[in-house]
Length: 434
Image 1 (cartoon, rainbow, N blue to C red):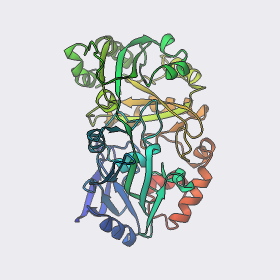
Image 2: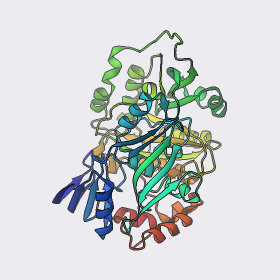
Image 3: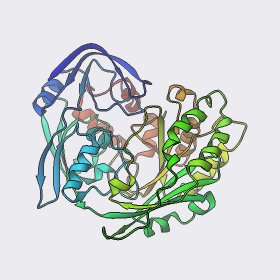
């Protein structure tokens, strides 16, 4: 265990900074339990990629990244047990090496597993990543260990916990046999891709839409399961597609001063980078997960029931295309689909859900990015739920209306952490605690 004193914690894009008294880098569960038991206030962090202020801001911090071992494989049950600081990339590669897969993966692989689970990270066309967990070992506020297994009532509370019920120590996933997807990508007009989403979800094993605000188009990605030896005539698109981030950075550089230019920039980017058709095959991980992400992003994401999403989309589109406001949105807005589950703080609690991401390419000026305010206002109107690791303004009163199990979660949190050991200033406002 390594200890650092009196330093500054800085998020991945430098938008959030906090001082600390003690920072521990741990490698064992014994170290983890000892620090939690002896600390008055403590938060845990991984790769610092949250846009929400949930990872630091307390006197004692624990860096979980070196707590990253694969502990056990069970071939008979197709299960893998790992420490919570493992990066998603290392978990997935280990799973695929066994001929297994986790059925629904997020679009980024650099986050630590514990943070991804605690904040409700998800992919598309399946459930939350946490829904595939069979067992947690959790360190509670008093330093004791609690094992929680699928089927227990507490599991529905712990699957998405924002790290306030306890600290995830180890995780056991139950995996599926690996499969191959035939992926097709291409642009579609809004009027076409928004139609019959429920039928599209039945027709495809993978569905994702990268919506291109101010262009009238979306970039649709579909996938169907095929035998791994199926021959595909692959289309990878023009070689210049790899320069999208660089061109985006240039075009969006001054849009915080001239928001209206976003509309022009989007049309240019849409024409150059989202106008070709692609076709290929691979595992879910190979075919659909981004392998890197620049630290120049700030993100918000909201979800609504699938049944009301078309109405929400039309209202959002109408609002942002009015030139009398500043809600011009950088592309793309990521539209994904999450199947219903029973997790108390899940975005898809008891109902199939559509999530919609909103990105600011200028992280340093994200506080003045009007699109974040606009998307929150519209989604809240329809009972929308925010992604716990991304930007939002809603607090206890609003969250209690949109999460049916909010009061139950708050009660459990208080029982498990009566001294608010795991609450920083931001989380206190979320739960209305002093």
